[in-house]
Amino acid sequence: MKRDAIETIRLPTANRQLQTYHVREPRRFERPARPFTRIAYAAAHVVADPWSARDPWLEAAVDWDATIAFRRHLWSWGLGVAEAMDTAQRGMGMDWVSSLELIRRTLEAARGVPGAVVSCGAGTDHLAPEPGLGIERVIAAYEEQCAAVEKLGGRIVLMASRALAACAKSSDDYARVYDRVLAQVREPVIIHWLGEMFDPALDGYWGHADHGKAMDVCLDVIRKNAVKVDGIKISLLDQDKEIAMRRRLPKGVRMYTGDDFNFAELIEGDREGHSDALLGIFDAIAPAASGALSALAAGDRAAYHDILAPTVPLSRHIFQAPTRFYKTGVVFLAWLNGHQEHFVMVGGQESARSLLHFAELFRLADAAGLLADPGLACRRMRQLLAVHGVA
Figure 1: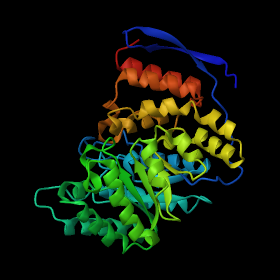
Figure 2: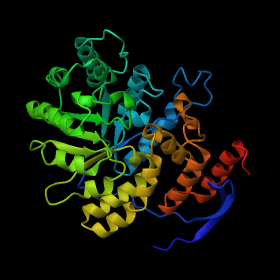
Figure 3: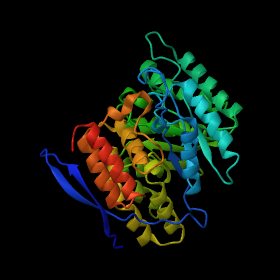
């Protein structure tokens, strides 16, 4: 597909020079005309309130209207919303009180959108991983959050627990916690295994630093509680590990890929199965993700890969180490594309990436055809350059 250059901007390079870059016209995507053949959630970001007097490192200040408007944008492309997850800066600026309010508002908005799907993060993040913390308190914390989400009518994504990782003595403690919590949920949940590359505090989750041994523990929990498990989302950024686990899941339990490096192949699948999607990158590439999934539903695998192939380098850049700072790139792209009027983040996380990182993100988003309004994107990129003293 030929895309003509329509804007010019000078972007910084690693050799401390400004280089002329020609921005091309964006790709055009159609809203989905038929259901997808894959379940697809976008883990959605929050929009900060720049007018708030709150200190951003200490308290979350959210622009609720802009935040909910972005969820409507995701629903309009046929994507579900995974709410109050790590993409929404859960545990990196958003506490449980703010997250529960986010869940309430999103569920309320979803009721007015035909076909809107929402699943909501429930964890233990209101419980500090302090010395002397016991397993029973972790269970109680999970129970509290699950009950709060269910009271609002939400479906649960059972998030990994920093508190559990801090106090568990063995894999038996993980099994004990998950068995107790899963026995009480009303509807099947999505278990979220978030790797240490996303959150260093979760290193050794399931009682093992070795992912293969950890996988055995997780699979035992799922098999024992299969009636209460809709699926497992793993975020290990390792295609082979995900496929190996996918092939061992009990019948009826889904694999939701959280692999923002290899999502295209994992969603397409192979003769033995495929992964559904619960991805932070789908927040940033919603139109392309929707277009690709529509192509896959129509049996046009060539078009599927044609659309997604240029989004993979973009995603790998956004999620590069330190991976936990990927939210900054997601919000930056939302700002470039006019989904919010500023590049300010909860927790001050807009400062987590370098100017060179943003310049390369701009180039890669353009290469994927995802700068919806090149003129606006260029104006905003120039604003960022000016703030950094680069002109």
